[in-house]
Length: 122
Length: 227
Image (cartoon, rainbow over all chains, first blue to last red; front, top):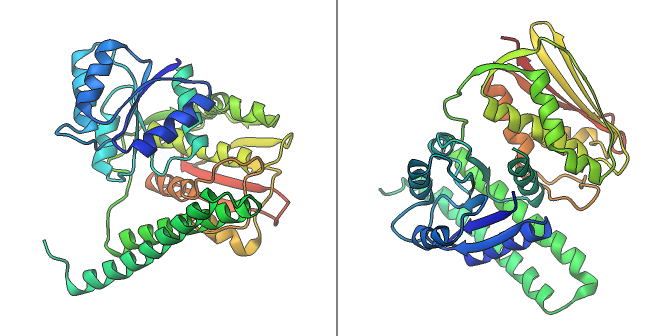
């Protein structure tokens, strides 16, 4: 697993993720600020992993986008949610999506690397 | 929905504290941008201290207002803890190899627990990762799984920086300021162990820390009831 798409509405956070992931040896194929932007990037290229915030700019949340991806694809792209939400219902919604994981914000780079390595191996 | 007078007062104090911390972090960032390289280490440490205090204040506010941050409904299944622990050691190989830390695992058979694998994996990963972060290169890490009095007991022992006796209770406090730092510049989560204890207790178990003192290593002990 090498190619990652980042979906995050805060540009500075998205930039920081990209820097960290590239230092870890992963290729970031694109960054999107909204579900709609992400949809057009996904049509152009299929990444090996999606990094996504739960709440995005625009009408569609990250969770809704993830649910759509999973409903339309028998072998959906795994998604790692990076979220500041600690609501049990958000965690449960993420866990209901097969192959998806989450890390709570603030993200520490070591935990992020551990999780990316896990996706790369599994 | 309008806040009650007590809630409004609490939010006011929180906002005041948060603004001060953010202003301090902004000030540190501005000075760093001015290229004051001689003090950059101190400025970064200062900004980090403000960050931890702001996060601690946020956690306190959520506690005061009774905001639920539990684990939700546990999806329990029978888990072979020996296999899970071995798997998580393998998953963190990149971390141990980078610091050339040998990991010796002595894992008992029949450590079957009824638990939610999602949280138990995160818990075991947190303990292993913590042992690596707070130990220097080449320092051995021991992982011991035993069956004691109806519990599966997992010890993760490191020979790292240890914890002073006065700081031991703070190890499980979210965003507490502790003197010990990771040995190779690794990031400090500072809330993971607090969450790990919460995950253990949600399963009817517990997580404890012991250390003879600074520089003398630490042992984290997870107890989970056998199925």
